[in-house]
Structures are given as C-alpha cells and as structure tokens.
Image (cartoon, one colour):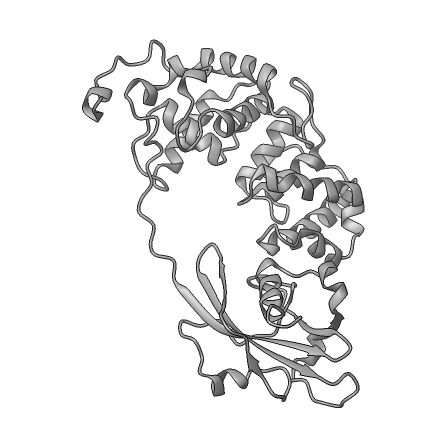
Length: 371
C-alpha cells in the first residue's frame, strides 16, 4: 500500500486525551519493566535512586546503565554517602558511561543536597533546577516519579510517543517545544510519575524507533500517526551536519617495572578530571612526527605502533596514532612541565583507574604488538 493510500486512512476514533492516560496507566500496571531504581505502580520511589538513574540514563541505554547503577548503590546507598565519596572514586566507578562532567556534577549535587537541604531532595522543579547537573528533564522526572507531583519529563521515548500520538510532522529538533506542550496536555494531576514511566516504557517496548508494534499498542486507536500511516516515519528529523574529525598522537610510556605513565586532565572541558595517556592536542590535521614529539612527556626513543585508534564522541570523530616507549625503572629522566599532573600506575592496576573508554582503547592498542 502506497504512502498516499496510508494518508487517506480514517482518522482516530478519539483524540489523545483522558482515555489515553487511563489506557496507558492500566497497561503500565500489567506490563511495566522491572528496573532496579523503580518501585511498583501507585508507590513513590526513592528520590536518590530516581536522580541517580536519570543522570546515568542520559545518552545511555537502560541495559548499559543497570550494572553501573547497582554498583553505585551498593557502594554509596544514600546521597550522603555519595557526597562523602572522593571524586576520583566516583570517576573510576563512572568510567564507561561517558560525559564525565556528569560524574563531577553528581558529586557536586550530592554535596549541595546534604549541605543546603539537610540530605533530602527538594520536591519542586524550580529548587531542583538550582542544583548542579539537573536540567529541566531531570527536574521534571524527579518531581513526577519520586514525589508524584504534576510535572512532564520528556525524554527520547516520550518525545517519539507524543510525536506519533499527535502526528507532529515538523522535524526535530524544531518540533521539541510543540511536543513538550502536547505532552503536558496529557499529564494527569494524579499519578504523574506512573504516567511518565508508562510513556517511557511504551516508547522503549512498543512505540520503538523502527518497526513500532502498533497492533500491540494500548493506545493505537488514539494515535493520529497510526491512522495516517505515518507511525514508522515519525518523528521526522532534520538532516544532521557531518561529524568533523580530529587527529593527534598519544604517548604510551612504560617503565621496565611495568608501570605506565598517566596524566590527569584539567577539571574543565571534555573528560575533565579523568586520567589519560598523554597526547598532543587534538586538531583538524594529524601532526608531523617532529611536531608531535614536542608534546612527548619524556625524551626517549619512540616507536610508532602500526594502525590507529578511532573513537567517536558526540560532536566529533577522533583518530590517534600511538607512539610507545620503554624506559628504565631506576633511570633519571625529565618529565615535561606538567609533571605534577602525571603519575605512574602499575599495569596490573590500570583497570581500577578513572580511565575513559578512549584511553583504554589507546592502552590496548599500544600493547597489542608485544605485551
């Protein structure tokens, strides 16, 4: 059946509204996902668990987050415990979740809740928004899910569900404001948290980005996109600009006793506060060998490891050549001017360090030729 014929289908029997909300809540009670940060329907959740899970879920899947969440809760079961934790320990536990600024804000937010709110999360969106690392979505999610207050969080799943329910054909990101307003028209005064989680689950399990299971959907008869044959193409998205590439050289230094040289990155900026393999700046063009060696952390003989390391960040693609060197354990040699940020770490202990994924890739590649 062609697209034109799809568009000529009969419109929904009823527009999305109170009946949609009732149907979704009933579906949620029967089909909700069992997640470690959730409590049952009609029950208020732990604000700490809601906040922690929502911060972790930004840019990351539920499946990937679950083991991280469980380890965090086991190690720091309360917001007060997290506030007391060393930042480096939090960064180590966070490694692999990306966006390390979120881990730093996690610590800062926990400290602010203990210091300014007596260890209890504030209930109102405006107060939550004043806390480090909490934006409009997270504030609304905590308000609705943890406290049952009327608030409308709109994540990617809810955005997709609403765009289909109301057949919003304007491409994203331009349609975000309209979608948020439409979502707010559905949010009930009671059970706002259950409704938000029902919408999230519907988007994750039924109203999926590709091949939505419309026949299994509890609100199919309310869905304008389904009636018009548009479910599989909504939400529409504006064409993205090409992701730029950056290049550099990483310097993997190993002592004869097995220790590896690492450097702590500045607190501000990408991967702030994390440990790294020292490298040149990441620029639009790969540096020549002579230029690259000006950034080397030690003066020694360097060997280029065949191949390269490629890592894709949200806004750019990074490609690094790796230079490797072996230096004596007891010899005297000079580190560069930033040696106060450098440390030697035994190779066997690298797994316990606050190393982001790209740095783990560099180390693995550097040792791939002869371990």
